[in-house]
Length: 78
Image (tube, rainbow, N blue to C red; front, top):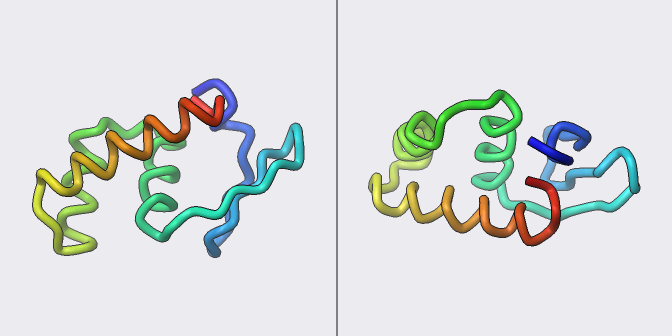
């Protein structure tokens, strides 16, 4: 997890990259995904967690994880 491990994640929806000071606004769903990625959870585990926590289908949760991973990669955080 290249830069992801250098993020300071609080209980709100702002995340700060500690090396650059860049701030990111994320949804609570993305915050859940980010925390799970930082704990090196598998995508399958994250999808299951999202499905249970947010009462969404597996397909929707999978799409959320995939989309957010793409955004993190674009931002250079993965």
